[in-house]
Image 1 (cartoon, rainbow, N blue to C red):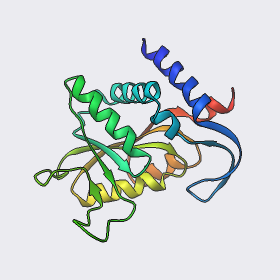
Image 2: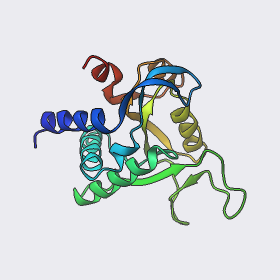
Image 3: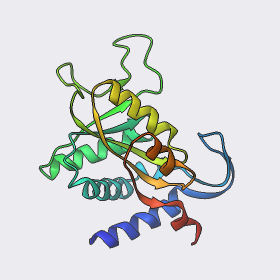
Length: 187
């Protein structure tokens, strides 16, 4: 399937499985009359494969060592991308950032690394399913920076176009998205 065909097919899946209209309160606390819940798309076999494929292709030239983001939205994305990257002989390891470190065990905020791994000096992409204001991705980026990682990009699947671009610019974080909310709102 061509990139444009994959992108169109994924948009259809998102529209059918993950986009809706109706009053909702977003993670940012804002109210909205439309929503994206990408989990049904991320956990659908075809949706997961297409998200991984398009994300991997979007990152091909970025020389990325790790991909991850804040739990829960980043976990299925990072895992699918890591698996595909291995199959494509261009491995990108995955991790996730806890919203709050566990109060027992290793008490880590960045999870998924072995005892011998570190993000120190590694090129990292923060990935997110849906971005509104950018707060969740910025929180993940702060944890990665504290762990020594170098953030090369924040990549979201859907940008709601409600302030994230400006927030990431203010935080010095490059930002891209696979889709914009306006692409779904006009259909």
